[in-house]
Length: 222
Image (cartoon, rainbow, N blue to C red; front, top):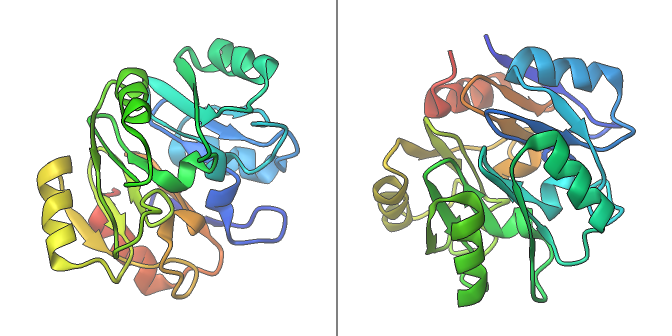
């Protein structure tokens, strides 16, 4: 089973600190070797160590896919250049007052749902950087679509209070199965405790058996 329970520095909120796609993962420089090994063995990608804006909160401050990476406007030039070299993808600073990019963007390789709070120019930048179709929307009535869902190329798991209308919009937009779930024993903001790609998933250590089975079904993890 390509699912591994982990903690990061004593917390099950692992998605706050990491980002993963089908071709790379980004983790803080002080990530324990046990976590690096879990990334390699479970997600089958290499873990690139970096800060973003001198912060360890990689999952909060960035969003990306195999083609590009979005970071806040204050990300340092040497961080961006290092990520470009290591990942081989487009890296773009997102202008404006919104800096928690990972909380506002839900993307896979083909589609990207973004917060209604993002401006038109930002949507154009996201579309160009990630090479995806971009659309504004909410999950469970919330603008923080990035922290309220996790999307791979096989499925999307979202906040348990998502409405039937929202689920239908998401299914049509992403073109893959979409359903609700929780992590870490009832946490509705699934991105906080889940880092996944099409190969596998890292989940917070407090996630229960039924929660794991649910996300395996939704994300079609073998």
